[in-house]
Image 1 (spheres, helix red, strand yellow):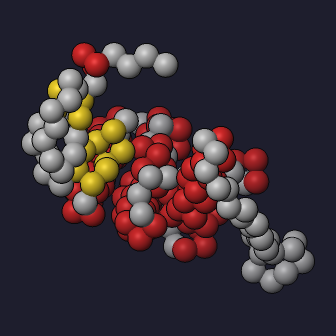
Image 2 (tube, rainbow, N blue to C red):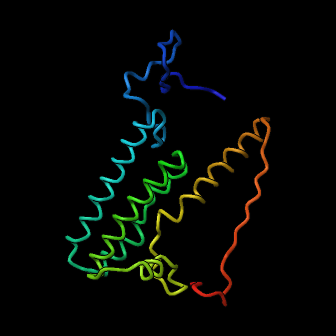
Length: 184
């Protein structure tokens, strides 16, 4: 492998005398490939930035003047792709807060697009895939745990490839049977 020193930056608690250029001052962390790495405060400020951008995009849906187009964009483009990416990289407690805030913003936007107020049952149905009779809205709150597990398993397989000890994870998932009361 060849490292292009001219394209590299270095970040650390102490200045270095290496040939790699220093990254410069940073306020508690640095973003690497869009992922906040550093203090909890730094990660929280990045989450706030993502939520602000999401809110801006959701508010722009109103300007379309066509509820069908707004709904399609909400379902296809604004269904929390950036949020889901961050869920894989944040500590679980911070990821849960980010997902809950994003869900509230998306639910509010869906209420405005549909010109109604969805109750808890209707919101549950809206999150179902279209093929199951739902609206196909991706809910970031339901992807927190799977994203966290996926991140752990990806990291674990990388550790195995590098020769580090690998942990074995067994997942158990219980789904309601079709005859159970309250099953969707």
